[in-house]
Length: 136
Image 1: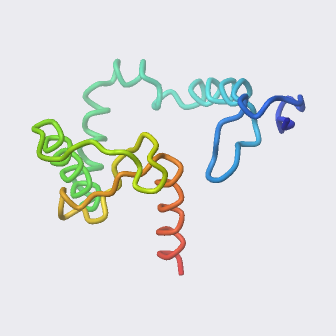
Image 2 (image 1 turned 90 degrees about the vertical axis):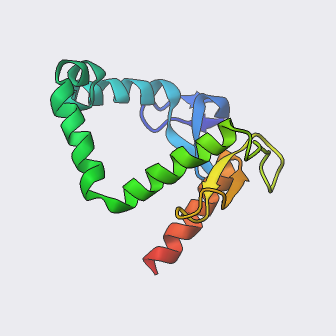
């Protein structure tokens, strides 16, 4: 059992989303209400706004990738890896640590073949370690 920081109710752990090695402080219901408020407050993030302002949204996206070379490299590598999987040159695998359903971690964005299969939990742990190493 865990107490939600927003509604102050005691709830089962399954009613909270995982975060890192633990759980969020607000329950799924309170998080949903919060997200709805954010969508109302920030209409640019809203799908409806993006649909109405398609050209402006596309321009913003283009500029982000145009001026952020690191994101361009990541995007290109991810697309190439997905193509390799689709063409059967890379096989989908389980987490290399716990043998659960896995997602791809790119060890080097210059090489789409240099990947590690990690479950969501181990992938987050790895990125936490990487970010800590960068900040030191």
